[in-house]
Length: 245
Image (cartoon, rainbow, N blue to C red):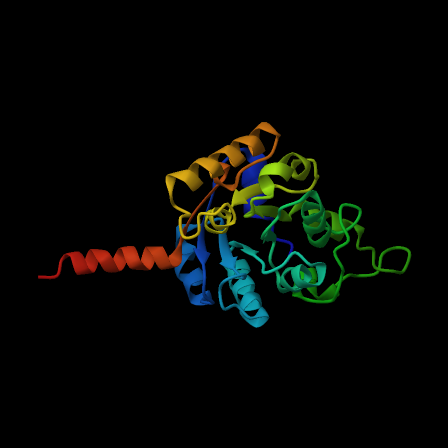
């Protein structure tokens, strides 16, 4: 549980972190990809069929092969985010961050005090509360809290039209490491449903990310490179089919 977050390390060192994205629970895939020395695996816990037990199994497998587990959660409510952190995720992407209040809530949920108010419990994400008593006779968890905060990756997904007006205030919030744009939901919110890959939505996305960078923030694409496992499977399948008579 004390492994460093490889994505956070890459971000701080100014280099790229490489990963793969899973929309379905399959810890075997994490093992299969391990020899390629990916930095992270990204779990879609918002849209994918991940139970909490599935998330824990994925985190356990990732840690065993030295890959950092991060993921998108279904809600930024503290009690929801906590369930995923307690399973072992070291990075959270919060969906539908459309206001300063949303951004503040995301940070509170992800980080221990004094940076947030993440709750502490004796689960695998906190090493099952294994602490030897210190010189004063009681377990001192302050260093653990600090290390957890230092190794926590917090991402905000911008997916709503309101972001256009509220982005400057969102960028004022400390504790968010990077931003992304959910272009399908964003396109729908500006009256372009089903057109997430259109030039119009792409232009709007580019303007938002330009504002993020101008305001001192990072876009996920600036330091994280990944592809969906299902896309890799389909690409491999197409290569086989292309050779069919």
